[in-house]
Image 1: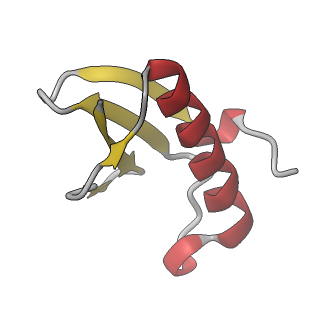
Image 2: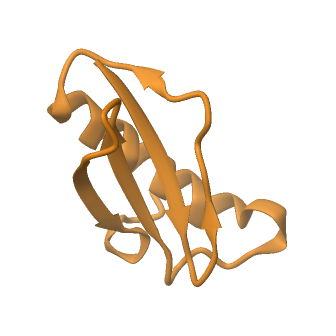
Length: 74
C-alpha cells in the first residue's frame, strides 16, 4: 500500500512521493520514527513540537494523525 506523510504545524508540508508499506501498522511505525526525527533535528530550523504527522492512503483518505509532541526524543 502507498502511504503519504504530511506534516502540519500551522502550515503544511506535503509528501508528494509517498512510501510503499505493507499495512497501516507499518505506516504508524514510520510516522512515529518521523516524529522522533523531527523533534531531534528541528528540520529547517523549525520547531515541530506542536506539529502533527498526518498519514493518508493512496486514495487520499486519512488513516492516522499523530501529534509530534507525543513522541519521545530518545
